[in-house]
Length: 172
Image (cartoon, rainbow, N blue to C red):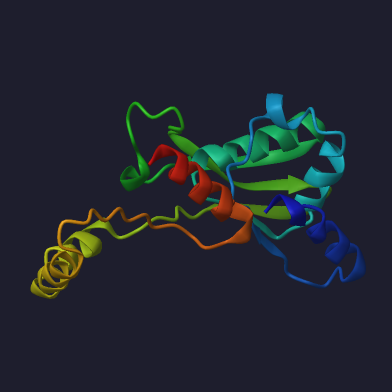
């Protein structure tokens, strides 16, 4: 995440022999937004110290490379077609090709894309199972006429759980 942006650069200086991979979890902003940051060069130089920098989708990888090229001499940028299974026509985040490799200061840097999501078919299959139907019936029996609202999310203090519950309470 953002709070680790400078770590690869520090690691590379301390241990040039390391192989460093960094997966950037949140969306990576476009150059026009990213380049307002005061430490933009230090951040990108640090990420370029990696052997591999990973992103969720091709657009975020493209944004990273665009930022790197706006700040440094980065060559060459190798691109490959985006796999058909990742294509989503009409999406604001659509890319037809994605960067997969670049060179910075004589170092090869791999740029990888690893979409993260859920197996919808698996979830639907389990939700329609006899076991799920049985458990649903048990819950209805236990609750009677009481309404149940279920929300699923990470229980991570950085996600504002208390604030989410408070806002939900206001909605109710």
